[in-house]
Length: 241
Image (cartoon, rainbow, N blue to C red; front, side, top):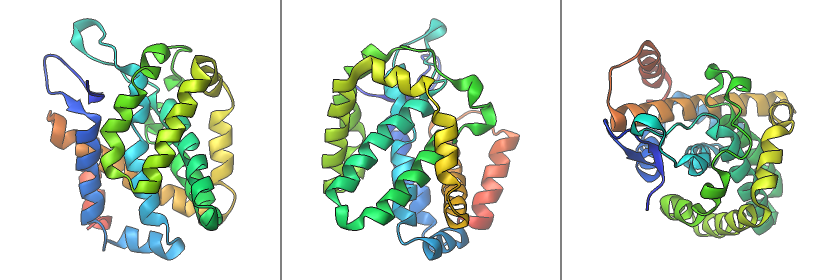
């Protein structure tokens, strides 16, 4: 059993593990880029924040692993659930690295922002998933989700994710539905606006995530190059190399 980040019976299929692995390669190649150097000046945790945002940005797709008509999967609104999963994980991680509390608390806000808004151009409010949509089925796949992403995590992060997914499973459908229907948009935005420095880190993280996400999808799924794709390529050439 796999978790798919893209699925179309008449085209290519892409697992979550494949998508994350390809996206992380962009981050590796961007280590000495202008943008990453600037991010590291603002925060020593910048690269870790970008890496975790890439790993977690599509985890919410675990709740959308049901084929629609014509043999495809629709993932509209997965970013709501991805943010929820990451936030539970981040709180667990902070507890396990309490000596790094301030830096990880900042990282939590940065990643929540970039994960939640990585499809902002598609209108966040219109992407709100239907309450209860595939949640019960997704809760049964959380162990599979862990298997898809564990190889990208450090030991403490693996333990935190394992505990986080158990918490998500225990709290169940009502808690996930309540999170989606709550004030998530305002909360994530408000937390990111705490300071000028945090704003800059959130925007930088989001830019890298969008570039890595789109580039990975283009490489793994194929298809025609779009105008947006050309913009992402130019941005990556200017700032991530």
